[in-house]
Amino acid sequence: MRITRKTVAFLIGLAAFMIIEWISLGFNLADGHPTAFYVVHGILIAVNIVLAIVLGGIGLRALTKRGQRPPV
Image (cartoon, rainbow, N blue to C red):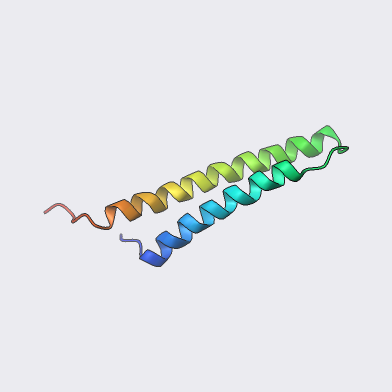
């Protein structure tokens, strides 16, 4: 199955957006919340960054394989 250019661009753009968004959220969390608040948001940030890395990897792998011909 081939991935279109639009899909590759979407995956890479989404990955970049997710990383920027969640890292900035992590820095912008204000002090004074209960510990559970930080634990939950820390888990959310970690999971979303892992998802962004996976999506970006899929997009980059598809981008690098676009120019290659399938084996005969």
